[in-house]
Image 1 (spheres, rainbow over the protein chains, first blue to last red):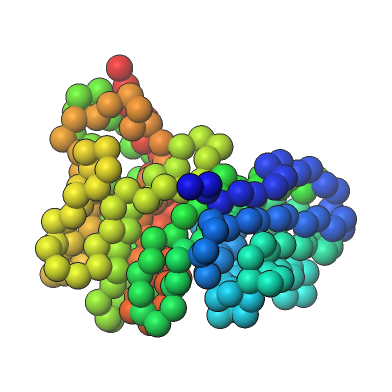
Image 2: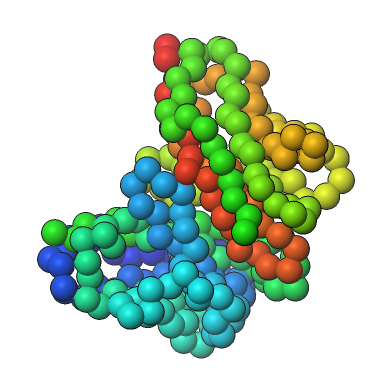
Length: 117
Length: 113
């Protein structure tokens, strides 16, 4: 079974530029998550999708971050414009359902390491 | 709000010695508890999880953890460290009604030959 795929693996940009990350979850997984992992910290949930609807985006900085999950499969996370403090690893994860109190295991992709100069 | 505390960002252990990583949580409702491992340049991999039932949970690679409600703890142990255990370990918590994980800061484990 193929795992969660993410691209690109690394990205270096100047501040105020825009950047986009792509995630392809495990086939059949309804729930998709984006996490931000700053160096020396644990991952922090940015947004959770259930199929193509947003379940939780309370920690997403909506003035500069946006995310979408078209057709309930692939997802993109965009930052525009980027700030120095956005330098981090962006992790995508998926789980089978994740709805209604279940504790589905989340499967993580390898992440995209973003450096903002 | 729920939170997870992992003390000591870096943990050094000799090969063959006990691995002990501590995790404490704060919550007013019963939590679900997880340990994940992250190898360099890779995503997180689930080691083990506690939801309900038996409080001693066994995971992959010889790791186990015990949920102690009275101590609000979920410490991770392995009797004998192997060089391949060098990685970063994260404790996480979620709750009934959602599947959102809140992570601790992690422990970087170094295994000394």
